[in-house]
Image (cartoon, rainbow, N blue to C red; front, side, top):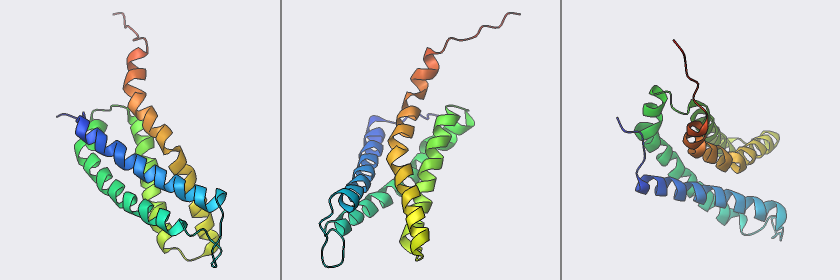
Length: 149
């Protein structure tokens, strides 16, 4: 029961992750930092960034499903890196749910709160991913306690 991912799979995960993160960060930059409003009061590039982010969001959901079957369930049963993996899993699940709700919730106050939550978790996600990737190396560097009979 192999839980290690091939280089090709890791490349795909990283490409999708970078795409979804950069498109979300791009929208944030255009929305909050590069304000050049059109007649509707928003930057004309915002819809493009959101469409790209939505496309990568769908790819990330599919990738998450693949990871579920290939990696997450198998590693969970082995009790490997549960904290870092559980944190990463929870963050991705929260982004999927909040992204869905952002698409459908009409109440403006709720959308603002959801949006803030979504972009804070999204911006922090690379840190959770990095910690999970480094968990094996960190675990190997810890001194092993020896038990005496």
